[in-house]
Length: 335
Image (cartoon, rainbow, N blue to C red; front, side, top):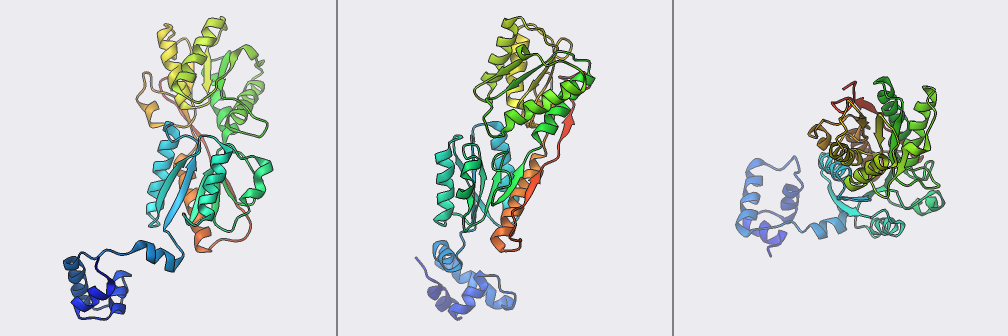
């Protein structure tokens, strides 16, 4: 493998000049730069990134640890993080934690071992009692609803407000018996508990009594979960004319179950989801949803991390909560 000294000898320049070319130094003459580039091509010279990283103390790679990369939401969010990181000349290594506290701790350990310059971590398993584990000497930004007021920067979603707006959208469309499909709710705040709270707030504000028979809890935010939830609602004999689903993925499964049961959407039941997935634009009918500004959250998370890496931020942790808006489509009367 050719070395920087070999390139310098072939180009008739010093190793320092070759280094200046590699680092795009502005004061290298064009003719000299051309000689060095030609020598590198002829010798098939490759930059030793490992050695460069050791010298600089940087890997130019950030980590993104998310719960389930096979879920459409996280796949699309990861793509947005990768695009944003590229504008800062950073690569992204994506890990799947499987909603496991232990795997989230492992992701933190990789950053501790300098595998990354910083880490964006979705905290699902870690909770408020684990806040001290985030007191580390490298940049971390957390995503999600857990560990608010923690020791690191935090990007969260407007879950309660978005869910309230979604339920209000159904009520304004004429729904009076609005069912909700949510995931399991823990002791600490999580997406399901916050979205359920927003749903309840909208009902209360409209003077509609909450009916426990219209609330279905599923084990995972999946197409199957949404399908099974609607099957359960229909089998129970519960009457409902509106359906708020915790995620778009759940809502898409629900749409299929309603279709199989001969229930028309939106004529018989209006349906709204949460997340504004691309897939919702192509369902039949197209899916009304809450857009929680995924692009803005990805951009903010990367920018907060880059500022920490470069040392351009203050000492105090920063909190960011996204905005949200309703995207009305065919699955609701107001669409």
